[in-house]
Amino acid sequence: MSTREFSTAFDAVSKPNATVLEQFQLSISRMEMYKEDDPLVERLLDNMAKNKIVHVSQKDGGTQIKLIIDYENSEQALFKPQRYPRDYQTLPNHFYFTDFERHHSEIASFHLDRLLGFRRAMPVVGRRLNMSTELWELADGELLKTFFVSPSSNICFHGRCSYYCDTGHAICGNPDTVEGSFAAFLPDKDAVPRKIWRHPWRRSYHKRKKAQWETDSDYCNIVKEIPPYDEGRRLLDIMDMSVLDFLIGNMDRHHYETFKVFDNNTFPIHLDHGRGFGRAFHDEISILAPIMQCCLIRQSTLQTLLR
Image (cartoon, rainbow, N blue to C red; front, top):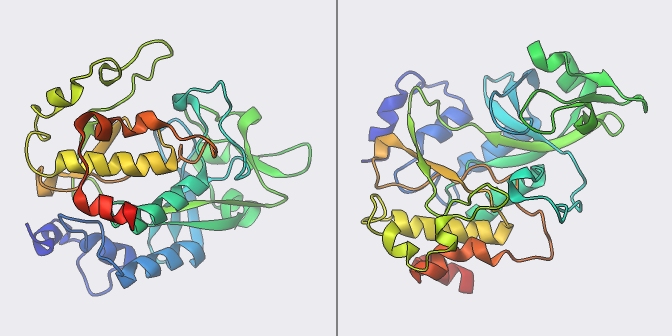
């Protein structure tokens, strides 16, 4: 299926005055999110980093706070605020599924995904915001209700989510600014539906139980018999994903998504890297389990790593 066939799902936004984000979304192909050296990437990063913000709301779902940023040019971005300094590492007694998300991990993971030649992650950029004029004054609904002034006279908010959305884990200005990651939005699910897949090497997300792949030495042979891993590119894509996750230290890859319009012969979208870069001096070898158990890696990926 060509890029043009993919674009037919976007007839409503395929117009002369399309935004840079819409142009970028229309350029997504079966094989990659964007082409190497695509000028739209830098334009999109620049827009997210500099354009005027006109509205802020909280994104529903998820375990930690994320905000939807609306710009005056009708583009949007997903904002993950900085919660801790960059050198703050995962606490030794924290499980991977209770770890804090780090905004700089989202930014660095996008650039690493591009350097590795995968180009399967949406563009992400960093930006500093004024807590008063660019967040508090533009927030609405339930999010607005969570803003307050701290004992140090700093403006803070905590939003509403499953974890760490309370006064004790609030996001506060320092003194009146906060930085975070701004990720470009994927195409709307109503226009271009996505399929959610359970990652075959998903962890148990349990304090005591282990996943099947951690105890079954023949686990890879089981995976190879299950569609879509029994043919095509998908198993090799999982190997690529494990390379990226190992380099960023991400143990939180429980599901992944693909664009339904491309059927099964397409790339898994590289999303949600907020739990990477948590332990600077530790290499979590278990993340490479797919490669070690299957004894498999894409030749181009290996050449890139060696280079």
